[in-house]
Image (cartoon, rainbow, N blue to C red; front, side, top):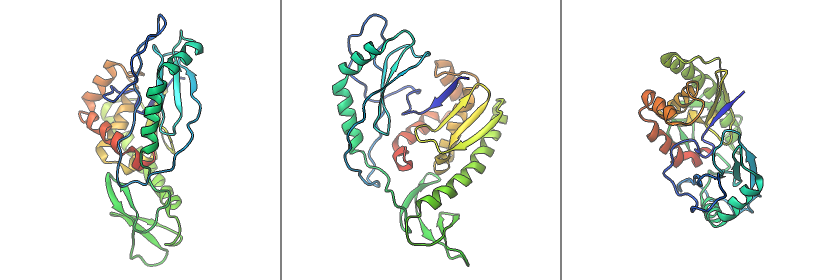
Length: 272
């Protein structure tokens, strides 16, 4: 079964970001493709430096070119096309060592969301930075994020595990319902909708019509989560990121470029 993934560093979409310098490759090797670096956000807390892990080499039977991608967890992934070799891939990586180090340096300096959430912490919720506030409810303690209320065990300590569990519950209800609604609107044959804790992608789909979504989309504006859903639905027409695919996305979601930009600029606020 083929599975098409969305936004493993947004590698599938047409890119406008910096790319490695061009290199001379053996016959049959394609051009260098792009990797992503998130923009900085002063609302986040910088994390300490880390030692970069080794490059991971992955063969992709559908890939036409060698590709070097830096994931958000700091792992560099070198994609080997169907007719390529690991030896050529290692030479490809070596020729782009300076680009990879520059990109990693930018990644190391990129701020991250604070690990501990407490009353008073500001989180991205429904597309806006929202303060975690005490709720004046009777009985068990609760906190509010805008109009949404979440029950907690106590006010002190780290509220993140409890709140993320609450976010997941809401996401399973809201994102699933929205996916079925948009599937009906676009007449796409969806067989199942799954909302999970995905760490490196916003969504994915299979040829069998199974749509998987990242629960963190519930923290995004509606036009952004709708875009991800439409993106996956259009993969049921085109299981690739060809021009035909992006044309189909544009027909059902004219705001897709704006939504993708929002994700790139705010993904760090959601831990991606």
